[in-house]
Length: 411
Image 1 (cartoon, rainbow, N blue to C red):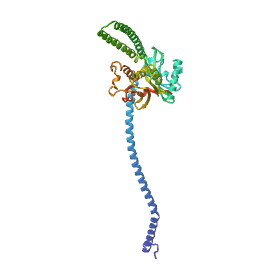
Image 2 (image 1 turned 90 degrees about the vertical axis):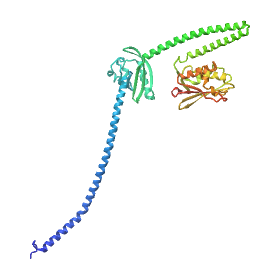
Image 3 (image 1 turned 135 degrees about the vertical axis):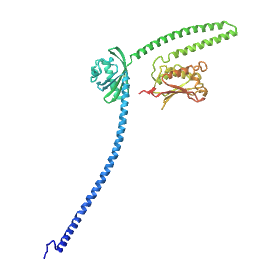
Image 4 (image 1 turned 45 degrees about the vertical axis):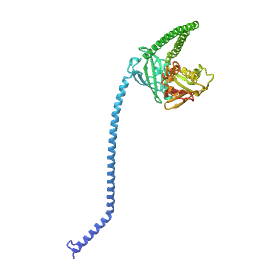
């Protein structure tokens, strides 16, 4: 009997059955693990694919950002070159300084104006520069004001440099809480020209005054003789001629008075003026006994020619002469996007529509328009305009438009 013989068919079948059972058992025990690993691999594969797509998108975004940065870098280079060219052509001295007065950076096109080279100035304190205590204190005070207020500080000073005594203008603006930019300009030539112009203007004004006085004296004498002649003559025609001559002489006198006012126009630089005070001084020269005054301009200041007082006098005189039945004059203001509107109005007859612009012409009704003509000229020096916007029958209203930078309010 061959129980273990390989030639035994029964043994072979038994062996194969045992092998088959083993494979089935192995397959049953490992199949779930294989499925889990397969699913994990599929999941990781999807994650890798998603990450790759995300990287591709990021790559495109980075490429766009790189191109944008390249364009900005090129524009920055062009801007820096342009600014460099501009800075090189500016003759001003440009300094950055700390709050304590230390020179941080220094640039000038003309080093002849300096006592030391720029590289020997940087890092020094202005107190150690030997410039002068008064100048140093003024500079440090301006630096402090610029940082605290954030506003441009500007002042003029004289300083002795290798070329001699020169006049400079300093402009200081804050960069941050501890640094300022100082721009210093040599204005010696401008000051010399201004001084020469002032001297020429004074001489011209003096000559005009002498000429006016001579003409006035001559006209005064002529008018006296005309009056004497009118008393001696008996012929009515000669009297009529003398009357016409007297009117002509009076016209010359009126024109001389007007010219005397006009010659002072622009003679002195514009300045900030309190409107209330100037208004009261101006109308004090006119006969206001029958007029009530209602000014509402407390604290308002405007930048105008010193002849602003003459403006209010002319407006008040216009009410006295032409504002029939007027009993009140008002002065008030209103702020608008275009600037400040200052209103001077009365409750008289008013001005006809077709004459609202004519009244500002010098030739209007011979001499009646001279005051208003001069008013418009005085205000126009600092860009202030005036127009008549009242309603005829309800009173005149003069509207004075002051640009935004030419009015302020006192504290």
